[in-house]
Length: 344
Image 1 (cartoon, rainbow, N blue to C red):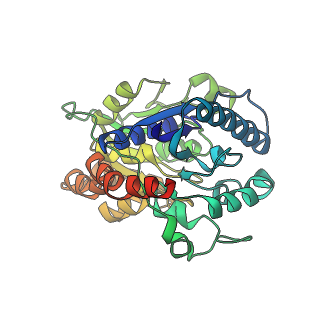
Image 2 (image 1 turned 135 degrees about the vertical axis):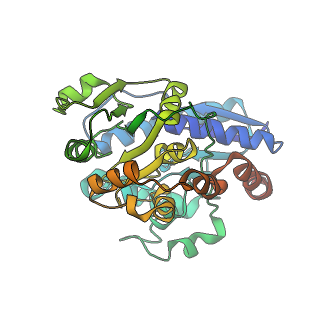
Image 3 (image 1 turned 60 degrees about the vertical axis):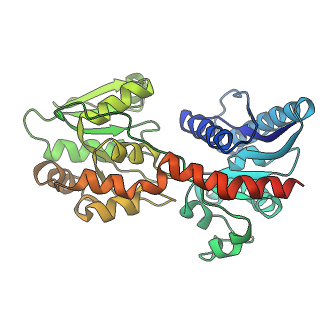
């Protein structure tokens, strides 16, 4: 028997990394942990069918693991992984379907998600914003959701750490992360960049294959834009350590791990006030409100021309609740005792 079984949806590299971090925190707290991953299903066109296939894959992975490895507690990573669960457990999530599956995209997911939330032993949102989007009953999300779920909720961030010492001179003016370029607002970033970039300044576009951008009709004819394609995490973080500004304009943000990583590696964050449980947004506003708004061009020039000297140091202070040490303390002192006591 193991103490905790983590059922990982693993549909993105960010989710997989978050699950590995959770396993590490639990093990450092003294728990025995098994992590199983859902097998990726074939791609389909609609979000409703995509979620169904991933939910079925998560159920198969959890059922097979529980037959061979008895576990005192189960954590389902994402509400999708929990939708068809074979056993009640805790649910960890960045954002619920109530927030990121509006209208027809979440017709079957949202009501089942509400039921699972009521049944779950614990709710483990990555941020307070993620919990606030979870409805307390059928219909729209309640602004009092955090209080409604307080007895079974624990906000558990994904740890973020600096990736290494600075690379010396920050020779890249700006960088953006464009996986899912429409959702990340790459078109907005490019428009702003074309309007305000100066001679010798370069915008690096990372996290997306150039062929995918070409198919989506993103144009890069303007001087000063370089697309790196998909990079290994260490290569990408090395670029962050060389960049002065991280710029992004998401249409919705479920958490903002790329933004938190950029702050950890010393970048100034230029962004818009996107809807969703955008954990990095309040930090960006506190660090320099000039750099948050819909006019990305003005914010970019402010960051490049008039950077605040203490920005990086204050960013490190603001990130203290997101550091691995702080998350480990939450896991050891709060999460693990509650998980195991609920399993007795």
